[in-house]
Each structure stands twice: as C-alpha cells, then as structure tokens.
Length: 128
View 1: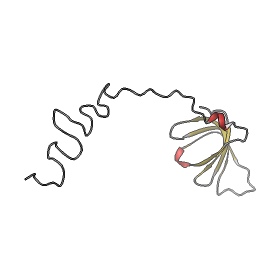
View 2: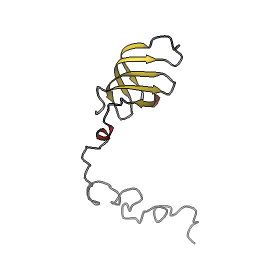
View 3: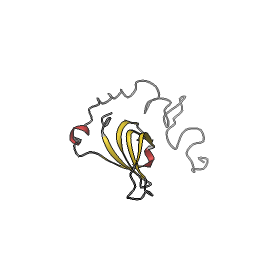
View 4: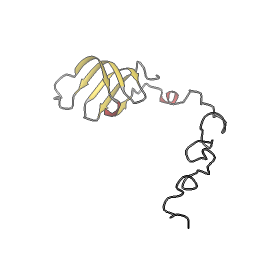
C-alpha cells in the first residue's frame, strides 16, 4: 500500500483520536497501526494519551484520516495500476447479452424483461 509506514492521526466516530504509524489498510478500510497513542473522548485534557504497541481499527468506525503535510498527495493519488482490458461481447460465460444471461433468451424462448417467457408480462391479463 502507498501509505504503509506513514504516521497519521485518525479521528473515530465516537470522538476518540488515534495517532500512529500505518502497517496495513484493507479494502474495507480496516486499519492496523503500530506505535499508537490513543486519546479517548471521555479522557480529561490533562491526562496523557494511552500508549499501545499496536491497534486494529474497524473501517466503519473511522470518521476521517489526518495525513501529514509532508505527504505528496499529487503523486500518491495518481492511479498507476494498469486497467483491465475489456473482453469481447460474445466471449465466455453468460456475459451481458449472451444466451442464458438474466433477461436474455434462454432455451429458445423469447425471454427479456416483462414479456414472452413463462407467464407473460405482469398485469396484462390472459391475452384475450
């Protein structure tokens, strides 16, 4: 990941503040930190923060990340991963528009949304 070994401050939804060095972030935004200082919301301002070796924060508890000012965001935000090439329309499996795809013809019937298949379109009576 691009932010590994960066020291950040994370504010949580419950008002607590976590300051530490990122070791890992997963796609659900779960964040693992080392060398952590935890300031609880209910903690008095004259008390020192709690020091921890490591902590894991569930992604849905994060309000926002405060990144260091020295971080070059213009280069970090560029997507350098190669884009996946699009496959051709008729190739492989039940791709969009292929036989057997949802809403498409299946086993020779006309198919499609709202008509032609077993039972016909909804709410149109019996077709007399």
